[in-house]
Image (cartoon, rainbow, N blue to C red; front, side, top):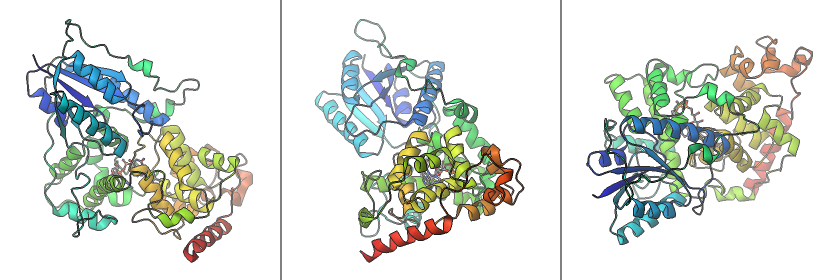
Length: 474
Ligand code: FAD
């Protein structure tokens, strides 16, 4: 009997999973495999927080598959070799997957497709993780967009993204090998994705429920209230004003098509403007992937190449560590960096301020910050992380101009006026009043354990502007 392989990657869900749904609609035995591929050339190894997430996401997925009559096979190695072996073991006649978009991954997929065709195996791929695939949205002259607003306008003017597919209720059982036994799976624990000695993951576990169910709950909660005030709520780090779907979208536990159409169902008519604002944030995610598609080196090479000449100053070890650990002496930056360290996530407004502090006030190369976020974010994303770092640095597409320097004190007074967010993540500031909490150096005796400012805002701002002027002067 012919058998099918479904190869899951960044789509760890049963809902709206076109590859899984297509395999489930046929009676053929089906092997569902996830491959931990750290061996194929160019694939960026996951950071620590993302590895923690992946472990729990796979555990949740395995349980969901079992509850519908299937099973998750885990294998490790270069995908090409693993799949070739598995195709032979299970006498596979077809293989299905949902597309991914970074160049190294696309290269692996294209090479495997070629090999499959030569060996009489039908490889079929589907659109599942982006609403508008790279290459499908072009300017009038046929080029890629460099600016978000027209990009998004073109997306919205085209066909509505397709309807999501429901999760299959029953799945075909796994394909036995020639001798009737089931292919052997690695044990998830043997992959060592969880941190040990020290285990720093307790704050992550308290904050998140990785997996499809956790993602759907987040979506429901968000649609049940915060979305209606998203326009203002999204700027208040002390409130739960955003969806917190980012890691669920990153690992494909929630489909962007499901999010899109849930918004439509929730607001069939007269959607508040806030819904459009939220939708355009999903658009930024799409835009970042379009940028990565045209610029595969986005995490290492300036999008605007004139920034290759920019005079970054290597921060000293203690300076960099003060930023990483949330000890710069600027509460808004420090609360964000501590939130990141403790929970694997940081509020967007604070990401911008913390990133600006590193690249502008400390004049550090944005790649240092990108790498730190890559290691510590549960939503670390191959497109959104570098694209946003370059946006902040001024070297990116549609970037914030270099001379826009976030003032962490002004930001904090404006967006966390009562200091709720600051006090939550910086216990040393708990006793300060609502004014001093934004500028603890004005009463350092009241917060003796909190560090003094690492740099002066005014001098460091001027230094950054000078460096930018030099770049402009050539
Ligand atoms: P919501 O406000 O609820 O937005 C909904 C979804 O839209 C998000 O889940 C996300 O998928 C997408 N989105 C929102 N803002 C952006 C944006 N600026 N760029 C791309 N997609 C966006 N986001 C990541 O998903 N992964 C990253 O690695 C990442 N790194 C970042 C680094 C820096 C320096 C900055 C400034 C931003 C970064 N972002 C990244 C974007 C943004 O901060 C997060 O997507 C957002 O904070 C996630 O929270 P949320 O799910 O509650 O977002």
